[in-house]
Image (cartoon, rainbow over all chains, first blue to last red; front, side, top):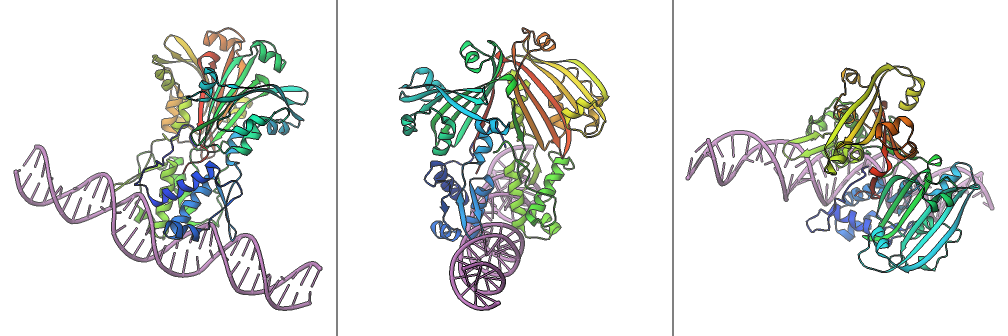
Length: 248
Length: 248
DNA sequence: ATACCGATTATGTATATACATATTGAAACG
DNA sequence: CGTTTCAATATGTATATACATAATCGGTAT
């Protein structure tokens, strides 16, 4: 995998059939038109739909399978996978799983919730060009009795209107969003900082203690969805990322 | 891409020809037997070598090309690429490039160099099972006059013997290694910490100021190559990683 | 020498075909 | 009624073939 990479499929005309099938299906999945679990047309159906041979369709589907977008089952067909290839990335930040892996009880608690018209700062964080409604959330993830991470989140309500109806009192917005919004791209920023007063207070650590900050922006089909900032006390947290340059 | 993933090719017997060709060639490249620039056999040669059709060979080579291990040129053949697809990952930590991107002059300065038999701690960091010679290096990366990052590195001399002859007085070991050792896997650990005395002194910051620590372990064909720890002052550095869930 | 042009060559893409393999669903059987 | 068997089905892998495309090499003409 590579951390910085551009999509090599352009929407042009002179693309190969192979590429066209690939991007068509990928678009359907990422847009949500084909939800997880949905059965993709059989190879022979796509064969007639695209008026091409089975080999061509097969190559495209095999590639999608290798990329983890779909799962192929003999005799049954091909199915859109749960967004879990993505979870492999996101599990870094599915805090419930991290906490439970430590054998500690997990709990989420909302600290604040505010629906507002996006400020200039909100738009900068989300990458929005024009003003619109956003939902600002602050919450605390607990491992047992101890605060484990502080979460500060913005949700673009123009992209995810239903989020405006949610209270997020005890369910964390992260899992809620993952279940509803298929994402196509995410950007992480990782840095260290000294805890400010608000943070130190929430996490119950000393002021100016070192913290690890992970910020993530997520897009779905070009539209900004959410910006989230996780703040971890330094002692409690190490990110681990394992890379293989290429996967056969 | 996924952050945590296992190689799906086992060394077993009942693998498809496709997989066998793939892993054969990949092994040749990663082991260094075929250096960057080396022309790999033409499709029709592999066809006779593996006694299979051109399509099968072509599929395997196309996949290697997409993975970035080789480059294919019409009429000329297929060539092992410089390890640069990997640079897309590593550029996160090619500090020279980061510094020069800021428009500042870059300089590396060695602080210490020690050849020794690996201690238990060395082996833990490198992931080595048995004792052997290692090279321990400490150095400082400068952006202009200011220290930019402190580097603490171990090199497994059993894997990279030539490194023992290098002084690394003004050239950083990172680029030196990348040019010589093709790597097959890397693991990053990222965390925040308060500067200890040695670090604060080297980086010219306050003791207990927050720092971002990036540790990387690298393997080449199952053999540990190097362990490196970069320590950045919090103000100077943010890691950015951009993910796309799958690449067509 | 230099510029142009065409033949050659290796890869790029697609087809039709064949058989293997895993899984399902239903029929046959105890 | 439960179990076994078998045929149908969708995918997995491989082949032989065909033509397209890009790059290179040589020869020819300027």
